[in-house]
Length: 248
Image (cartoon, rainbow, N blue to C red; front, side, top):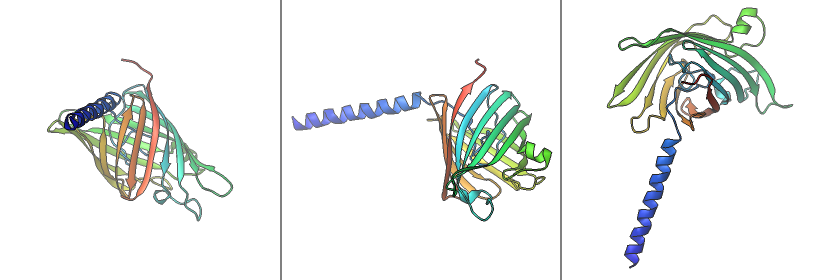
């Protein structure tokens, strides 16, 4: 009698776990998500993937102090707030404000910037997608003000499938036209979406300065969350809310 009751409890426990897993899978959706820069990309480095036209993100990212340029003589962790809109199939616009944390005298907004990404070439069967991008355009044009996250780059991405698992390989080059350049020289990475859970994206990249690993996921089709280990040891990450301004 005891063995029968114990067996029944195991069956109930199994079904509960199965239902939880099924529910979890059902509330998440496939993604092409935001990077630590606030724009579409891998973890910190850009990619040539694009969001669907009319995709709007608003979010905040925590940036570890060991992976940003110092403000004066002291390093601070940062919190970046951003709004991001893909209003054409080939054009993405982003506004970001960066605030210092743990600073004596309270927080301090140290940087505001406007960024653009434009897709020059859409991916075809044998052709990768190609995107050019620039960060902190306003400061660059007027020639004054803080510029801690300036960037200009070109990047290509190609999607492929291995045993139904989706793999995206990206390779790019960061130019150095600004006073400070976030991406300098060659960068690239790999994104992996397993066939049994395509809603999850695992990533590894070299952002031209450090090697990073991390993952991302989108809950309820709107809540985007990602985390990464910059330099394989320092945590950074973010959360954003995603909406579609143009319905299919």
